[in-house]
Length: 95
Image 1 (cartoon, helix red, strand yellow):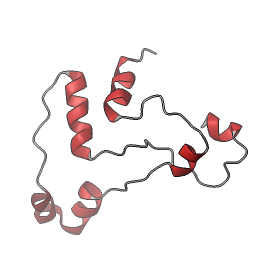
Image 2 (tube, helix red, strand yellow):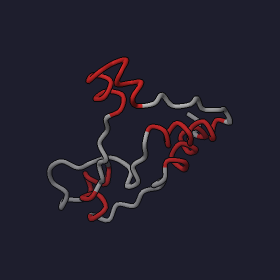
Image 3 (spheres, helix red, strand yellow):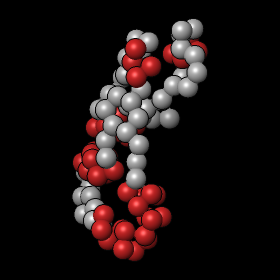
Image 4 (cartoon, one colour):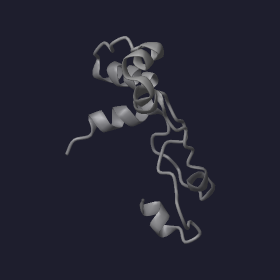
């Protein structure tokens, strides 16, 4: 956020997300590994569709693979570009 305020060439909408998107399954696996806990087996997509229909498809299986192109082009450097590093940093942080 600070980078966008300090970079006059950045105008308009900017995606504030990682340059390396991951799936929910990848996130869950990485988080479980960092916490030292097993992750549950993900619910198969066809089961979600059968149980929840279109709403399940949109809310549980859908996703957007946004890339912060404008942020990258402006020279922003990510401290934790990979999900494992980002989660480890968040878990290790003390307030």
